[in-house]
Structures are given as C-alpha cells and as structure tokens.
Length: 244
Image (tube, rainbow, N blue to C red):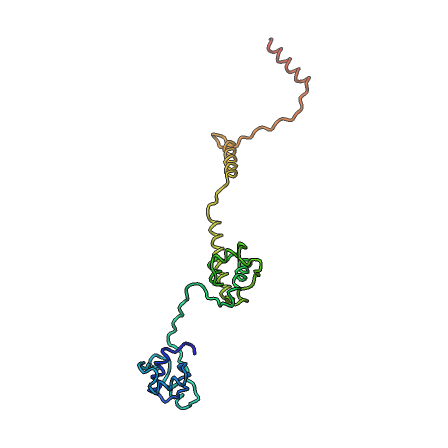
C-alpha cells in the first residue's frame, strides 16, 4: 500500500454492509483481525461507528470491489491517490534508537575530524545529539573520551549518506560565501604598516618640484681624485689676482 487507509474500522463497517466480500478480504484491506470483522457483522463491535464509503474518498474503486467479490482469494488494493499531500517535516532533534545512542560520541568525533566545516546545528541534525555533547567531544572533555573511536555515522546507521552529503554541501557553500565577503571587505592595517605607508608617501611627495612637479635629480658625487699641487697653484693665482 502506498498510503495508509483512512478510518479503517469505519471503512470495514461500510464494506460489511454494502458488499459481498469475505471477512478475510475486509480484514486484510482494513488491517483488522477477521474475528473483529465478524464482530462488526454481528453488531458486537463498532456498533456506534458510521460506515465510510472508500469509493467516494478515492481509496477504492468499484471495479476492484467487483473483482474481489468474484474471487475470494483476491486481496483488495488501494487506489493511487489523485492528490499527494507532502509529509509533515518533523521538528526537533532526530530520534536515535536506544541501542545506538552510545555510538553517537564516536560519530561526532568522526564528523569533527573529517568535516570541520560542519556547524554544530548540522551535526545535531545528523546524529541527534546536543551542543554540549559536541563541545565535550571536540574539546576532549567527554567522560568517555579515552575510549572514543571515530566512526562514520552512516555506517553506524545514525543517518543516511544522502543526508550527510547534503549537509556537507551546504557547509561548503556557506564557507565559500564567507570567504568571498572577507575578500571583498576592507581590511585594517596594523600600526607598523600604516606608519611605513605614511613615511613612503611623505618621501615621495618631497621628491617633486614645488612648481613643475618634476623630480629633483641630485647631482651624482664627483669621484675624481684631486692633486694637491694643482689645488695650491689655483689658490696662489687667486691671491695674486686679489692683490692686483
């Protein structure tokens, strides 16, 4: 059956009153015991329940009833629903069987080690644990930390591979978006970098001419060696010119 039968006992009441189906056929279709169906026919069971027509609510066809009436060994089949209602998503932490609850710290250790990009909320959804347990395993403060072994939660049966891949994909997308935001934002300079840039800018400005804005080219130092005799001769000529 693709979906459960609506109001099985009320449907059994209608089938008993309006069809020639056997008790076994009605019991199999309505998931009841044959003796319970017989009690409905005798009036001992469900005496105050009004029958519900499964043909009107689209869960059974008239042809299916006629086919079952002709063959006592035939079992009725639910009709495919015309409108499928989405299943209500369950809120709250995932339920973990008691036999597997002791394995959750091992799964947390595996997730923290192999997928550090996962957030605590994602690990809580996958494993069905609490944030305090995740922090204790991550910080190695768990009461059984010495005996913990990293184990894949999929292997332990705590989640499916599809659910794990989906959470990892989401975490990777979030990490990529955060890195892009940091790259595009304005970064702050340290005090040393700011002072170095200010000094470089000042020296660069002083190298321009006040009027033309062209660089001052300082003459290169003359590395020629001077002769002492030539220097003194020049001084004497200058003195003689001054006396005249």
